[in-house]
Image (cartoon, rainbow, N blue to C red):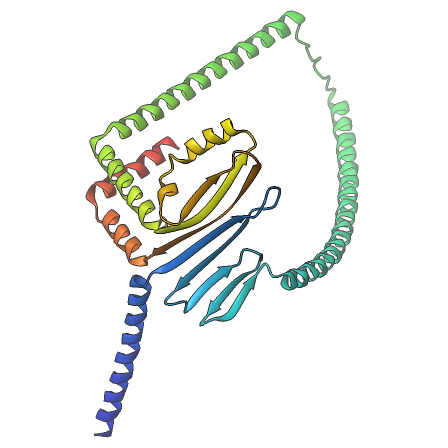
Length: 317
């Protein structure tokens, strides 16, 4: 009875753990990551400022950078966990880098001195071995000279090639070199044309065209999905010349984002200026990318095209 009770509680704990893991996975898949990107240009000649915030699960997890700060802060439940580009941290890191560089320089100097000593020993050893080999060689030459002298050996005179023979040999070497270069160039040209023909055949294939259309369609959908859902901003600009300001305004008017609610564009036909700010908001769910990966992976045409592309890549290399 006790064993059954223990097993029952173990089973309950395991089910609770599995339920928590499943719940966390579902949260990651379906709860969106929300983002906000802010850009501001306060006045002419000033630096453009930017900031952003990425949050998840009602800001349970968030990463934020303010417009007026270079610091990036990671928070969990509003509590700062990690900071980047913090001036204090940068100073400490710089001090650590200087100390590490000094240590590395000292270590490198010791290693260089050690390497110099080892090299000097090796040079001395090589010189000693060379002197010994030279002595042995001189001894052998003397012994060989004595033997030849006893046998009455007379060395045959070495015949030097004539100027004409040298000229003919030089011409032959040049002709052979030119011939080799021509053959190598022709082989490279044939290889290039073969690669081009294989690529053209792959591009013209019906399956490749179908896969390309599908990928383009999915890419457009992905851009629309990842893109901002809400835009707010204000822009005031002027060149000092009414005609050029009007031309710029005409070009800006072609952008669909200008007509969204919360967006204001004001031209200044008298003064030269460019000021403004902008905020974009959006959200992304991981489940979208999971579904996209599954669609692409189980598409027969895509898999066939991918295998063929790998084969072509090996042939081209």
